[in-house]
Length: 99
Image 1 (cartoon, rainbow, N blue to C red):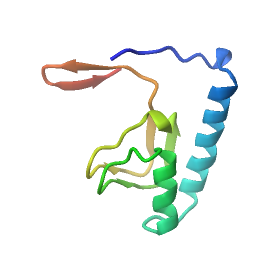
Image 2: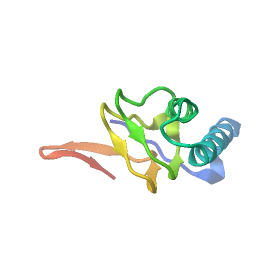
Image 3: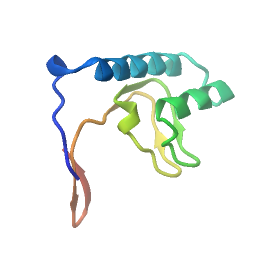
């Protein structure tokens, strides 16, 4: 897996717009009643449809670069979770290691 460096001092308009999208959607997500159709639609929009079947995301959520996150099938994301998807991952004999 190839990584990349994130430097907010050098971000362009595209990265800024993506960041603003995430901030607005996370705010809306954190202020919407869970287990409603409105909430489910916000989660799908936040993760750009990359949330697996049966997955559940509970508020409040803190998230950066949601379009880079993929949730698997039947994943439970507990309230208060922090996701920062600008990281690198390596495959080891024992499983995935996130750095």
